[in-house]
Length: 187
Image (cartoon, rainbow, N blue to C red; front, side, top):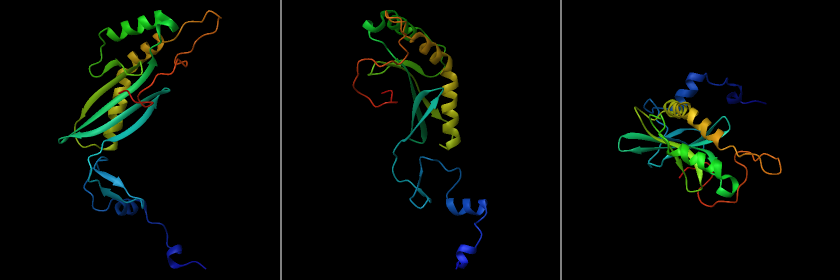
């Protein structure tokens, strides 16, 4: 036998959304609110940065949004290719280092070598307006589209030549293990 509560129809979407967000001010900034175990939104007291990761065409990117006074800053970073050791390919290493030193046409962002000897692109952006999910995603998409040509060029240059035995060493092939840093992080 069903109870009256089980027989009641589910609330309509606008009613469910209003109940979920309650009386929170709009727009809802994702770094100022959290989601409780019951699914309800609540104000966050801490100023912890918000981290997220995404991928574009098989390349991993990491993002960190944080408050700097009243402004929201977004640090974006993507690892492109490992810098090969000279023993692996002196020519590829030299081309990558030359490409990294050459001036790029990036209006924001930079190409760098991280502590694990991986070539990265990164940028620190100031977000105008509230830190809404749409604004963070739009900034990440702008970064990826803006850096796509340099990322593709570095990835092409990083392709290792054929080995003496005739097999090709793929970009990103396992090199001797390097220590430091977490995967997907550029610092």
